[in-house]
Length: 126
Image 1: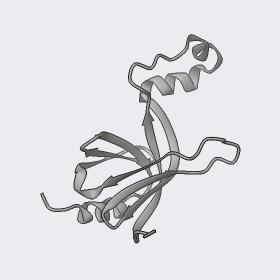
Image 2 (image 1 turned 60 degrees about the vertical axis):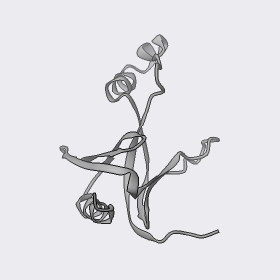
Image 3 (image 1 turned 180 degrees about the vertical axis):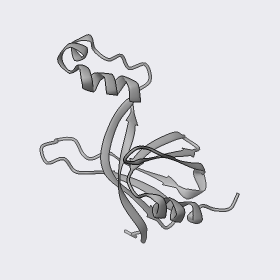
């Protein structure tokens, strides 16, 4: 097994989108109105984890939840498939939008300027 060298990493939250055609159950609006409103507004759930720039790819690994029986979510995108990187300043964080071959990815982080600069520099030239 070969490991890729990590260039940089930052704590980040990934907006895991709701499945296509997902309907939020009515009971959720009654029991958890505030979180249900955010779920609908964002179109998904924010998952905390680590965003890692490694040689040739970008990886996200969800923070392991101590009581969760499910394995942590993770994904890897080859840098060659990334078409664009957008950064939007928010009040206390930055939203990083990554456009790639399989669709858009939304991330949220703080003090991500250096990481994004390294990511842009690592992208293959168009």
